Length: 389
Ligand code: SAH
Image 1 (cartoon, rainbow, N blue to C red):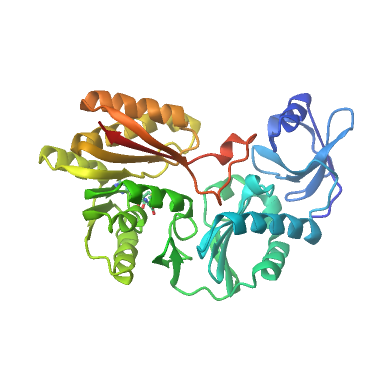
Image 2: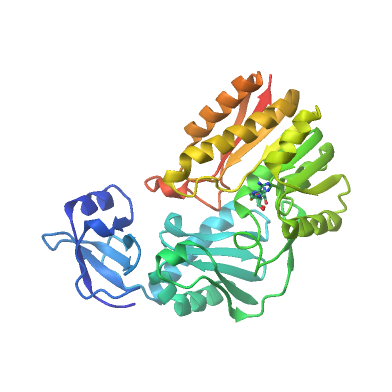
């Protein structure tokens, strides 16, 4: 990790760095020198001028991820300082929540490192060879910073394959209970740290749950509910909420969450949301509040066209079910689908459904998942709230 290997990059790469983006692609690397997988290397331009220090990947198309614009060592002191800064920012934005994202990769100037805090436990993701090589040191620093009872590596994600790293879930420190219970937004949540989606639950929607609850009323429908995030927040405002997901395991936890919070007006349904919406439409069912929070339909740029058809379909169907004054909360977590593109597709759906929509809120991921201005990839979640006028 403390290697002083030097990697030479072309002018295009130097330009990217100058414009504030930390990634350098393989095609822009001129000379890899003696760099080995996971090294922190000196990055220089073709005239040998220092551009910064980056983690080197021997496998990914993203060969370099900048850690600093200076010559630094990726050591304990460096990491500790970055982690402390990440923690200080969270202290200002997460209020009394027990679970939140402590480190968000590029947005905390630690590309490839995700750390989610769930009370006494931490879930980490080491998403490139540099962070993977630094696992031991990362664990030491997190232990010093948070004194957790357990740390689990949720390295079971697809991007690790591109880094030639194994996909696995592994307990790194202490013990991880089968399920932990914690408080978020004043409600109790059961979290499956070893097997739940993402690192357990969807922390990025935390503030959007509260926004949806402020608008919710009447009969509610939460499509793609997973462990019940939106549905359980809406329950106190709605007469009843129907909550749908295709994952029986997620719904099992959702039902437990409802019970722990004494919520009895949410009806959990295991179904394909597309079919369910179509069925409700055919049956003439009506709702006052509908949430759509589908999985990332566009995982890559090439999947965008198909994704847009998916967004159009669910939004069109949802809009046909909404009564006048009804509220639609429509989300997309695909980075490749911009807010403008989502607006466009919902506008087309509204036109087809014969509905006129007022935009009442334009939201994004919770503040503990900050967006770095010059790194567009850090902005992925859109949560748009509309009212049928
Ligand atoms: N709203 C949730 C997160 C949703 S993630 C929350 O705040 O916690 C997307 C969810 O969609 C996953 O739980 C997944 O199981 C579910 N899903 C994927 N395809 C589906 C489909 N066709 N019909 C219903 N649910 C689906």
